[in-house]
Amino acid sequence: MKNLKVFILALVSLGSVYAQENNADKALSVATSLEDMYSWNLYPSYQTYLDFMQHYADTYPNFCKLDTIGYSVQNRLLLALKISSNPDSNLNQPKFFYSSTIHGNELTGAMILMHLIDTLLTSNAQDIVSMRNSMQMYICPIANPDGTYHGGNNNVSNATRYNANYIDLNRNFPDFKQGAHPDGESYQPETMAFMEYALTERFNMGSNLHTGSEVYNYPFDAYRSAQKTHADKSWFEAMGHEFVNNFDACTPNNYFKDVTTSGLIDGGDWYTVYGGRQDWHTYYAHCREVTLELSMSYTPSNASIANYWNYLHNSMLVLPRYCFIGFEGVVKDSLTNLPIEDVMIEILNHDRDSSEVFSNSNGYFLRPILSGNYSVRFSKDGYFSKTIEVNTNEDLTDLGDILMVNQNFCDESVEQTRLRIYPNPIRDLLTIEVEQEFTSVILSLDGRILKTFKLHKGTNVLDVSTISSGNYLLKVFNETKQYNEKISVIK
Image 1 (cartoon, rainbow, N blue to C red):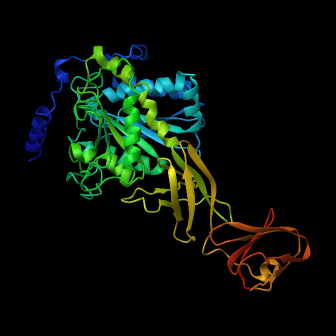
Image 2 (tube, rainbow, N blue to C red):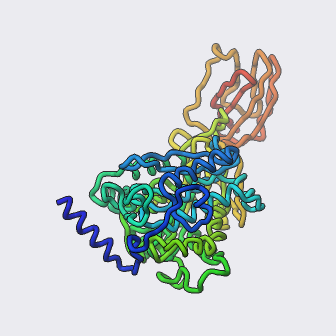
Image 3 (cartoon, one colour):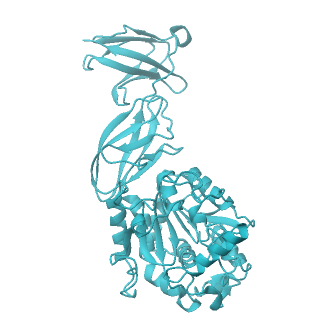
């Protein structure tokens, strides 16, 4: 039965509805050294690919780090270069993930991303330096090395779409319409590695590069637009139009015209895909991902490889720049000032189908969205929810620290703290007795600081007459101690 399946899949691959070049008939040449790679008209051998990735990590350690995402079925490395002003740290900056060649015989994107790595690390152009300093870029040129090197480590002419188990990795992810295992197969080592990497790194945006057509494909793939669209459809389309409009002047007029005249399509309107990485990243990992189909040929001839970088070198920087349209901030506990992870940031009357974003382990969040006025709710179990009004323009709006109040903060007894607070409830005057100097802060339940007082050793009488009736939090602290108390104001 397995052999029959392999035979049928092979026929499907050979009988693609698109007029693809047959790689095996082209005798594609490979680079067997780093020096060969810089002609940019040779595909890398497996060892050259490894050397290429390691070379940049070694040469630019202040801006670049090599990550091992995982291993393929045949134990080849799944690699990504992280490019950042501080690659060893998890900065409070946007994270963008570029990857390619999840179908092993679709190698245009691999060459584009290798060229992009070189540009991002060697160029001193102002926009490139700014990108390195203000965001964290992750680039994985070859996501299915077993498929790419199906014919051997020095051969890409016999590359195949599938991994070593003859599984289409871009149908192997959980699907929010079809559920787990939409392809009926177990999750492959490559699939598991990429899911774990995404959930660990918490990417904000991403793009997966393919070939076989020329089109910008945006979520969702599992639904036609008449059935379901993404809440940020207009944002995806704006980014796509800018991507297409930034092709180099040398680009042929018919480039990116084979699917739609605009060069853009809502994924399911082209054809439905279940178990694709684009929908998994977007729905499950809350990372907005698009698919770029970059060439009609799966793997262009050596003579035409460099053409695609010439067409796309400007456009490849457009997508990461869209990290800087929207708003960002850091969510913190109002009492401890520590970051809060997994706070849901939801745009009211807008978000749907898992389009919300979440804070990471630093409390940092990024919400890409077009300019406008939004009511944004922050919520997490154990904390009081809060809603704020956000106005965004063409730039990234920094909301600063978003303070949230823990519903279960610790009360310390008078005996333990040697601190007396009375009366409670309070009308106009609050008395606090302490044995050393402290700072006192009264906060609303949504984390806003209403009053701040300096406390001296002894008895302190504080005027709270301007605070409205209600329940509040009192925080008393110095460099070594902190006490929290629930208080009520009555009029």
